[in-house]
Length: 78
Image (cartoon, rainbow, N blue to C red; front, side):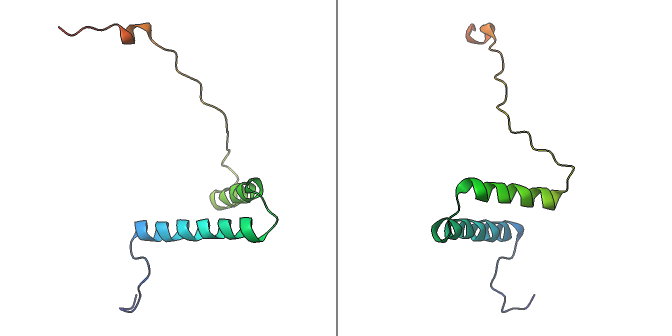
């Protein structure tokens, strides 16, 4: 890297730069194209699968609520 380089230097700065570019790109496509957020999300999911490989399976389900323990509310301070 030369001394003139002024771009992001560490992992966090590089990650932020990527996220900001991605945000700008999504905003641009929503404004300039006849595309919706579901299409963008689908394209991003396809890219994630491409980057991580076909072995990754996404299960988008609501997590089950843990059963409440009746004894949690019954406590005393001695």
